[in-house]
Length: 192
Image 1: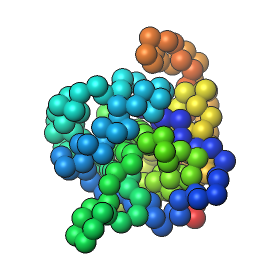
Image 2: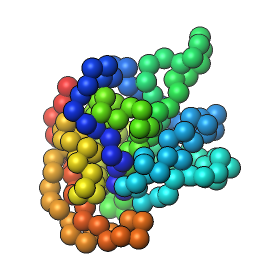
Image 3: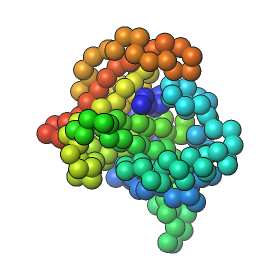
Image 4: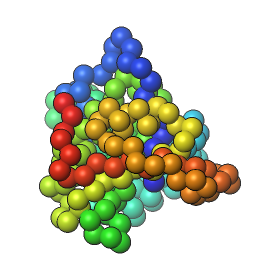
């Protein structure tokens, strides 16, 4: 699964790492998710197209996101009021493969939060939690389009290791693409 174009050099107003949280999605998040999952710029490097229907996204959430073993909302700060949950501005998923020791990472983030360190912070929180949450997973890998330099930088800042360029690896939106593979293994040091 490849990641969206996300990180640019930090700018004033960058998100504090402690302001970024991860939590499970629920169906009440559909409108927040629609805000970025319907953006064709956000989904440009994704294997899936931007959503055009709230009902289709709701079905995806019900049938794929909620039962998924590790699909989290990327949230910033607190909620809108007492007792409310923070609103998702993106998502991160870690999907175990048929080879039990490996899992694939995917990330999407609303454009308004690109270049502010949000994806890097979410990735750091992901690797800090996922090895304890998913039994048997020893390696998390990410496939990133060679032209998606921003996501490559976010992964590197989060401690992922660039391993190789996989030439003519997959077709994304009708085009044969080269992908860069990154990994983080359970014994890698966490980046602060």
